[in-house]
Structures are given as C-alpha cells and as structure tokens.
Image (cartoon, rainbow, N blue to C red):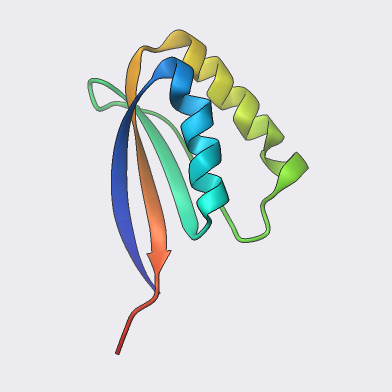
Length: 84
C-alpha cells in the first residue's frame, strides 16, 4: 500500500469537526496538527480498528488544542491502493 499526504487549513473552532469528518471518510493512517508557523502540535496514528471509546481521549486533547490556537493546518496521511 502506498500513502499520500493532504493538508487542510482550519480555524481552531472548526478543528475537531474537520478531524471527525476525516476519520469518518476512512483510509487514514495518521493525522498531524500544526500551528500557523508550521510547528507540529500533536500527531496521532489511526488504525482500522480505532473507533468510539478509543478515540474519545484524542478528541478531548484536540478540543483543548483547538481552544488555544487560531489558524492551524491538519496533515492527513492516507492509504491508497496501488494499481498495477
């Protein structure tokens, strides 16, 4: 499997909503959150089996970060099927 990276700019108040949307889309291996200066604030891997209660502490941490920052970017690492 190959991976691709995609970045999104969001305001702090929309951070948690955007991350939940991305997780629902599936095929995500890792999410990193960076401040507007490019410094990584947090990063967490997502595995196929991670759902519900297991991501609740991650969402709580994201909510705390979102309350403290303005503009930030989310970098998403996705798995993509290789076509032969």
